Image 1 (cartoon, rainbow, N blue to C red):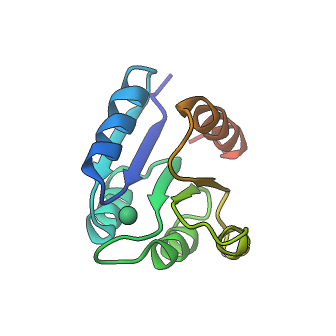
Image 2: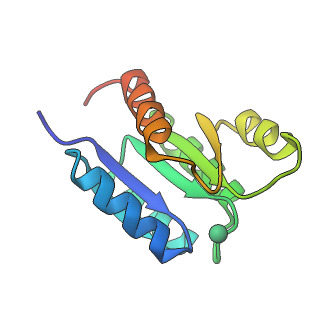
Length: 127
Ligand SMILES: [Mg+2]
């Protein structure tokens, strides 16, 4: 079976590195970018099943990126990871824009994210 492909976009290189190592070790093919523009290119190039995206990004903002991915690749699931603490306002807006899920930063563990990615993958029609 082909490895599930993930793209992670976050301007904190430390974070994307952690994600890359963690999911590489668990059988995923992971591509990472630190700007929205590069991230979108990776999405076009690798056609990931799941995209992890930070909201606050240089280049294309996370909101815009989410909408573009949803428009161009409706089968790709987008999980947004943000440091916003506004009582769920941001979360509701992102979910309304088509995000599959939303996580607050800092992530307490990668376990919840892993199960959410697995859930997202189970909803994606296989190629
Ligand atoms: Mg950021």
